[in-house]
Image 1 (cartoon, rainbow, N blue to C red):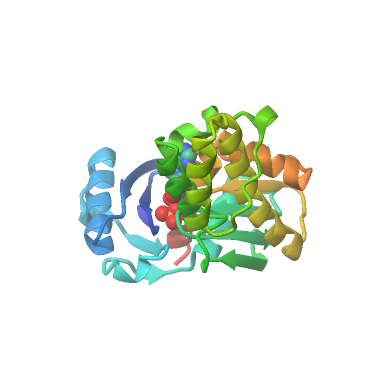
Image 2: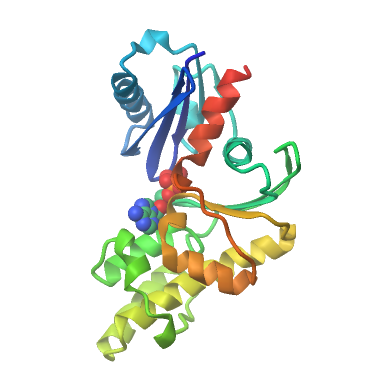
Length: 253
Ligand code: ADP
């Protein structure tokens, strides 16, 4: 069966096409039209797999822009899709921490990969990828550079909870010649503290998976590990677990 999972996120649109047990993946910035981005992703994935769009038998859309994907047979919540994708990759996982572009969530799953409980922050940019994007701009860096640029031995605690105030705080710290590596370590600590409080609300059960675009940042991985005092498993394609789950759930429709 040929199925497609589209995760149209606030920042990035991810797609996974499953054809004859092979997985094809692609990612595009979501941009201003989630519908067009979903169509573009579909075309790119079918080109990769050397099939026609009409060969796709089932499509499931997830993510914040899922309603806009008119070609989808079904829309399924990100929580369910992430749970399905992660459980497929590692059946030992019981807690998922997902940090995306504009939200962060903690999902508790059982032995069958079903969602038992979850907590979500989609009200405040602090504790999400948005916080790191805004603050990396203030540092004159791309968000992908933050992980390798941090220096936890010089950590400077960022006191501002609000993203806008944190940006001003960073500008003030840089003006005082505080080393950037310590400030960046402080940003990673700030994100992980926010998310850890959600983890404690839900309760932590091993194995803990860390997914979403922000999971690529080894500085946030480090800070979460310190904050939770627990090891964390990061899948190789951590940004694609929602799309993978959507493609797998499409097989079950
Ligand atoms: P969404 O589904 O909401 O679009 P994603 O899970 O795709 O979110 O994650 C997007 C976020 O991931 C961005 O806001 C950015 O902070 C972060 N990100 C993207 N690429 C990288 C990278 N190479 N290194 C570190 N962080 C990244």
